[in-house]
Length: 122
Image (cartoon, rainbow, N blue to C red; front, side):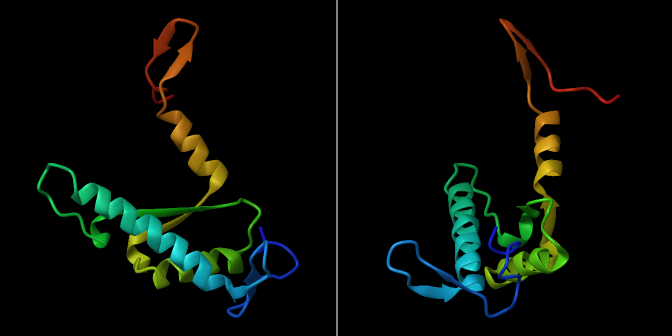
């Protein structure tokens, strides 16, 4: 939420650790987190028994951001993803409420001991 708050989004925004107050560029912190998640997913997929190799460009990457974030904050996330090795054409920035509603649309619905399929169109 720092990207939405008082600091705003600038290329040189620094973040501090909670305990010892060490500082690092926010862009570096975000890009390292995205890179870790990207590499973890690719490693996990490529260790499966299918024998198919999945590359970064084979995936449509989606980063969710809070709905209240402004365009500069979203652009900051795009830059962090690029620094993490994700190309612009492979990246979507989605608002969290929209992503949650799409996810819920495809979840099975359970009520008591009855289970229903995901919501049908209409």
